[in-house]
Image (cartoon, rainbow, N blue to C red; front, side):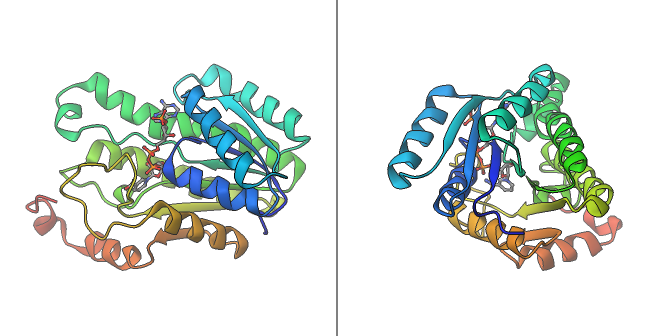
Length: 250
Ligand SMILES: NC(=O)c1ccc[n+]([C@@H]2O[C@H](COP(=O)([O-])OP(=O)(O)OC[C@H]3O[C@@H](n4cnc5c(N)ncnc54)[C@H](OP(=O)(O)O)[C@@H]3O)[C@@H](O)[C@H]2O)c1
């Protein structure tokens, strides 16, 4: 599946990873709708892309993950503006603050609503459309954090775990319809999400993640760990016996 020349909706367009992806897609002749909750920043990104890729077709839209009522309308608008929809990329994410979220259920709910419920609403609706037209792709940025519940970030991690399972289910459901579904599991990435966090290591650039996503789409991969070595790190973490794992402060 070659994403070049396709009509693609990117939600969470102000994410550094989404921005690098939009740059690559626009360079390949894709027509894009950039959807973000920060209208000014979304507009700035679109303006920058128009300068870099003067032929590129770019539209902007507002998107709030927790406002499910507007998700169907966003897909309608994207389809109308682009003259059809071939792909949807989910790049929304909210890390939250574990220590606050474990004490404050309202904050924990916000993290789960943005990362899981919002994704399920938007991607579920997108899946129905792509299944009906029997073509297209979905790429969802999940996280290695979803591979095992860790004491240090299980609120965000559990929401990403739910997202990974949801997207895996969509992949199975949409396979016979010829719709490709890619789960992306980055490790730490140098974006505003991790800015100033002293506990990050093996940090990748957003450009590296975007390159991996483009390759993953072209090769019709199911699931990507980015960089690749996170697959083996997470395998080690998943295989650690619970009796030991629960004592680790990771
Ligand atoms: N950075 C990492 O280490 C890392 C690791 C693994 C996975 N990821 C995932 O990669 C994806 C991209 O994140 P990033 O690293 O590029 O971080 P980022 O720059 O902070 O991007 C996060 C995006 O989510 C948007 N967002 C947050 N809450 C939202 C809401 N309620 N409604 C709509 N949009 C909302 C942000 O919008 P604003 O710009 O308006 O805040 C931004 O566009 C996310 O799914 C993230 O979970 C990141």
